[in-house]
Image 1: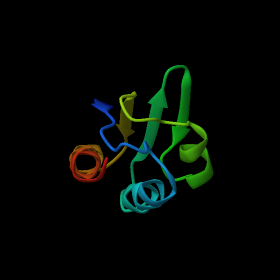
Image 2 (image 1 turned 45 degrees about the vertical axis):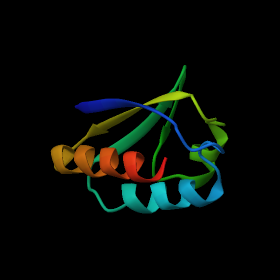
Image 3 (image 1 turned 120 degrees about the vertical axis):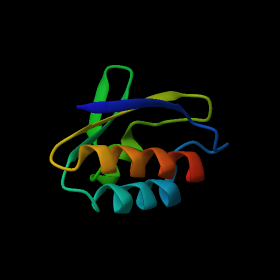
Image 4 (image 1 turned 90 degrees about the vertical axis):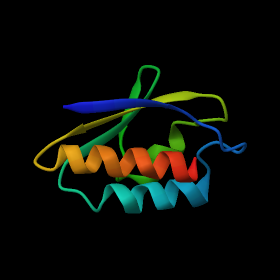
Length: 85
């Protein structure tokens, strides 16, 4: 398993538009991708679950990637977070 932490910089947090893009990005990979905030962990491929985390600006999330293409998936997700959130 690979993982990384990221502090959300988007002033609106993970709202509808970036959440939709995040889900689309996560679905490109075979690996299981989870977003963890506090005690909650949700699949990055489930839009309502991602939005249900209520991630705000300044919150730290952890992204966990496990599976066949985890190295590529982890790099791709990291690049997505840095470019969009």
